Length: 395
Image (cartoon, rainbow, N blue to C red):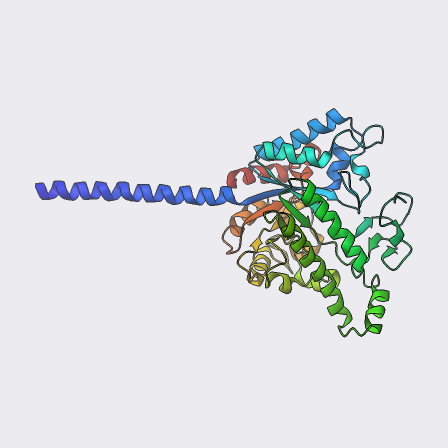
């Protein structure tokens, strides 16, 4: 009898031990998920909707509501477009004020939009990163909207910038002076604002002729790199200098980039040396490839593509944070070829992508492109509503 009682006690003990271990394991899993980056992009397009043309009190309330929506969704990071067109949403020594924040009188608002964003984000325990397009001046070729008072206006009629038909106006990535201007602007943000990160997207080289005069000069002065090597090196210099400039001011401020998900395009079009920045320290803290592909994409299926990006990371301190295509939900994805109808026929793609991404070794979170496709009721469709329900389940 005593033996039976002893066995029963042991079994009860083991049962509760396993229950505790299981509970702790679940708790740890949940904790790791809570610690992940859960970001959403807030672009200049959203600024045009929620800030531009508004009275100060209205635009401030809009910012508060935007951050409340993000917080209530259990997201924890907002990536804010502070410089979409060589401009700024704050008062800068280097860049003209962005027209995306001008008030109802077409004037600069009576408050610092970036500072207000940061203060309100941090009060909600949200992180906020400053999103910069380093080389883009304009999406069209007209000079009317470019301020003659801007420090870079002198570049317009020189080899340091180019008007590109059907594309816009861009700064020359090969110009040392241009790169210095970009770095100075970043130093200004990091030094003056309590920002959590600096973020570049994939707008690097705009075409294959913008730097030809610069390259000819380089060769005349004894340069030996091929044109492709020269271009890759120019972007690598910018990224490395950006990283070191940030860390010299505030080591805790993160620096990351969001390149095209198609790795080949980074080399052939943007001239971003992906392997170099992912296999060497001193370039970035995280990589956020734009993995805007479904599972059925014929050329870049999501699972294969995220695994390739993950395998390229050879530095322990570099995190992988995939950017996911909320904007494609409920639409035809022509470039997916045979998988073009996937975003119409399914309504749990984002949920599945997050779950799969969490199992990748260098994973540190995800980002969603972009705010309006999640929170603007005018953009909702049946698939988006179901995807939002699925998103809430995994958050």
